Length: 160
Length: 187
Image (cartoon, rainbow over all chains, first blue to last red; front, side, top):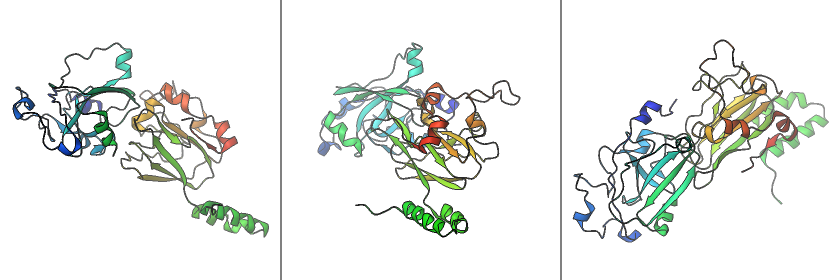
């Protein structure tokens, strides 16, 4: 059976050091932000571009999901941070577009706190909070809290 | 006007054969040559709603059922202790199945159901959200026709898993499947 075991899931909680990535589709490969502002001081390799590097792993190598998840993008996660994440999402051009936090309903109902989750260090365009019925890796009803670094129009381009 | 499907054509052929009293000779051929019964594995764009369509199905023994993934990632997995210690809800003489994850839209999984009875199945990542289905093969008998907790207290069932509440609420009744043969999801 290919289902991700709880122990494997429990292996993932890490630190997501995220960066904003404004810009248009035509400018996705070159961020308008100065290089220095795109580098987090605590990491040698900023996850602005895919792949983000260790401790992140491509989600499709951990669980049976497509490389590119329609509506979200190509996802990476530090397995130690599951299920909350953050998951780093990249567009077809390999640019960071969002960070996603996945919060199980049962944890919300149990009033569990999720503190100290890492966040981007640049401007957030908007946030979506969306119910999800489950998927490999988080096989239970949960909410996606999606912190977008791109406009809604650019997010819509991730549909395929 | 649309042209008749292959299944409709075969059914029509069966009626012609029956008229000549030779249906028994062709019944088996017709049954096995027909297209599989299709069950779609669906989802809305956000992954908020997921469902099998139809959620309830009646077929004759020997029918091949085909699940096809339309959106999202799904499995079709029989309620059976071999599948992650789920409770037994298919006929005792039937082999359990697990499609594994169907990741790409259009991916399919087939199984031919020969043992009469009620077959309950679920989608692994979506069972807790109530993505389940039920197939009645011939007669509505077997563990799948029993109450969900029929096994509690029986030897060898200590590690079986209960059917989640959302799944219990989603199953169509056996009576409705027998009456309608194809029960569409409410979604």
